[in-house]
Length: 250
Image 1: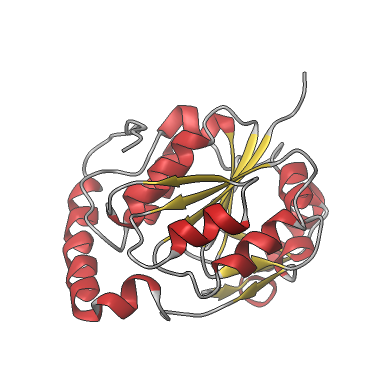
Image 2 (image 1 turned 135 degrees about the vertical axis):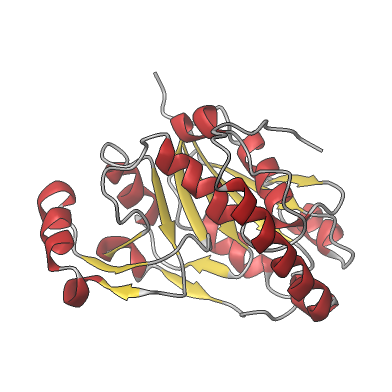
């Protein structure tokens, strides 16, 4: 049976560098990988640019639903692929073999997060975890971080088990963390420090902007209110043992 692979770029109003992100993905993923650009209702020239410059890429644009809603679209579009990855629109793969690195590690963990904001320097703070990673994955972990989701590599089992992001969240903030907590409850990770930055993959990306353009440029105060609201939602959901949220393409 042929192994199927996909990458979905989640974007909103980032036409100024979406081409660099798409080119980075196309030039570094394995041959035959389906590449999706999933647009959360951009109001700039993203639709015209992507369809004109990248006719071989699958482009899907829906109404603005916020980060979680758009990532649910990504998961829906990739639900039949064996290995898939969501990349946000400010992260550019720069070298080959990053996808293969995570794919090889999928026999041990069904989800991997890469985030630019690192919380804990693992070799110094948790040496036992460093030894665990060396033995099980032949990799030296650099950081563990909370699931901010700049890049999320997943197996098909994750999508079929936990589904999409919780629609209770509105706009930006917290939805990725709640989705990841359901992945953990489903037993699809193999160590309590779940969010890994694998040494073989971490240096194969670059950041192109941080809160530049996209949602933040449109209305920063609105985004801050959404994050505050979603923190309250996340707190309530901690007491609900819900594992699966429907995959809906809107």
